[in-house]
Image: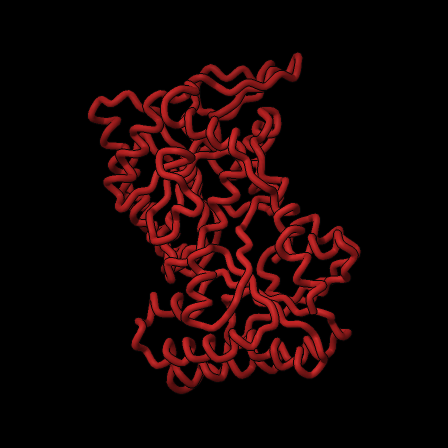
Amino acid sequence: MQYHALSLSKHGYNVTFVGFLDSKPHGDVLRQERIQIVPITEVKGFQVGPKLFTYVSKVLLQCLQLLRVLLQMDTQSHILMQNPPGLPGIAVAWLVCVLRGSSFIIDWHNYGFTIMALSLGHKHPVVRLAKWYEHFFGPLSDQNLCVTEAMKEDLRQNWGVRATTLYDRPASVFRETPVKQQHQLFMRLKETHPQFRDNSSDVETEKEERTVFSVRDITDDTVTLRADRPALLISSTSWTEDEDFSILLKALEDYEGFIKGGAALPSLVCVITGKGPQKQHYLKLIDSLHLDHVQICTPWLEAEDYPVLLGSADLGVCLHMSSSGLDLPMKVVDMFGCCLPVCAIGFNCLNELVKHEENGLIFKDSQELAEQLKCLLSEFPGSGGKLGLYRLNLRSSRGQRWDDNWDQHVLPLLSAK
């Protein structure tokens, strides 16, 4: 949604950006004079009585809060919202559009009821209500965007909604990171994360500035990547039910076993970024592991640092399993923008993004992921082998970036009111 806001502002629209301010928006959003940020607070509902009462009260309070915010703003020509979360946003936004004559656009990234079903089950009354809600209010929109051809067809057949497929594309900030910029990031990260520190005994602090991955010669300011560096593995997550990180942790244990069994493989530093409801659960699992050749850290990065880290990594892992089987993980889009090959857990329409044995690999379980890590890193840090081939393929097949893709598919909808 930050990309949408920036694209709208570049085309002369004044944008009011409404949302939870849980994390700092990207600097480009903050600097854009045409974008006004209106934060809304998380509503907890009444913490008495049964859980259903708490949930219903939360939704009603959110309705009132969002309705007040939208009606206090100047009249908008368009209201663009992302679904999920759609409860209660879809109904409230539709009502405001009716009252004010605005055009209502939904950007369908998934279905909210399928995400709820991960924890409650498809037969739960709340899930059934959420499904009815989305099916009733979703088709009331004036225009629709979606993220896959599979979702476009599902919306048409089962929802009566005609949508334009807007594949997520990486912004221009997602690119391979120059070595000097990599070193600068590693130096900042090593201040808080020991996994980035060089603990060898021959550190020449007067002449060299070192991390576990890089060395800067202070005399001439040249930076090189170390030949003995570990491989940098990255996985980003929102720590929710549709990402089972025990798969990755078990694969890392198996990878450790390969090394202890005599396999000529590099050590690993695995960086898992993000925050969410299950993070503490997985942090406990990580703390229980006893690994000598694999180190794991879970930093929370500023928006400007995240693409730099992706562009510095050697391999990405995606555990997004898709509650509906119809959406695609934006994290992989960003990784591909950095020409970073990916191992991704498979689901129905993933092949619209990840081409197996072309720009990455698709796996079904932890054992298969461990074997893929072993295969791809067998020639590290050399540029040969499958890992090098996939990176070359990504470099040669770079498609549209976000701006061109948005101009082609979204801009015409704004003039179709």
